[in-house]
Length: 80
Image (cartoon, rainbow, N blue to C red; front, side, top):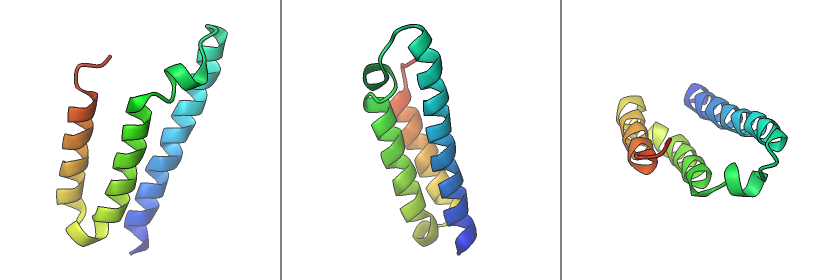
């Protein structure tokens, strides 16, 4: 229904708010947005959030959430 899609939309909006706030703080350090904020990790995160939203209804909350968290952990492991 509408609740899973609302949760996914909230995650996407939160993701972009965090990226925007990081952009503003990084500008003070004279670092560029494209190099430091939108590298591979950001695109992987966006793709996984979209996959989460798409798979939530067919698979259900628990399996989809487990797959999402597992994939994010694997994608971001070894990064600070």
